[in-house]
Length: 333
Image 1: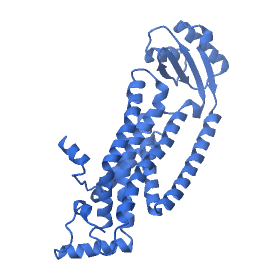
Image 2: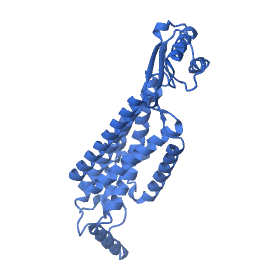
Image 3: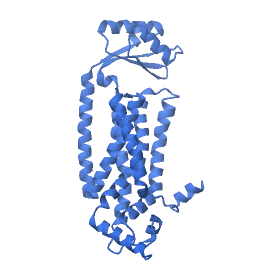
């Protein structure tokens, strides 16, 4: 509690930027594992993308997911995905011929004591999923172009590049978790992925805005380097960033763990799982990926190289400011 209170009051400076090798290594491992998962396992695309048959029914019987799955498999259906919502059930299978669908529908009515007319059957073609995917890719492209233009005009191109890299970092890791876990990817999951983009960008913009304000004071006589100033700005927005993330993640976690586990709202899982994972990864990336990457790019500029060289030489003679972002916090450009 003492550490949290000191952190909240801004009494502790964490050297996020200085530990860039740690963050890059951690992100590199996560990205590698995610890409391997995508290449080896691929994504478990839902029936909306690959086509299939969906049976929906209600029953007064007290049955489990396994019992429903076993009952459907007894008819010779192999790819069976069962989701529950209260006393309602949604069973997704591979594409079935019309006469076979009627047979399965009749058997469901008998097995679960439900009138045959109340067992709905829906055949879904893969064409619809292809159109959704195409529109999602178009939307993603437009979004990326708009973000690059906005960040380049509101801030600068290097900030736009760092933010876009962080966005792809978040998307790949989230998709990798889906690949390794085998969770089904549905149109709701795609919606969750697109929402992640907005959230991740919002967190990065908050940090970059503070960095822009602090680094604008840097000049030839500055007592702090760009990395020190950026780390100082990051520490000043850390609590705000963490609080915003916590407030956003709590309701999503409630939907994911309580809504889908205890109440059986299976369709919400597709959206809430993507949001839950993406928000956590997005919070991490805005602090530990986007900012260190921005600093790496900016420290290559002659202006900031000169400041760093001058401070390093004066430090060697004992005349420079003592290192660390803590001293930078009180230094004036």
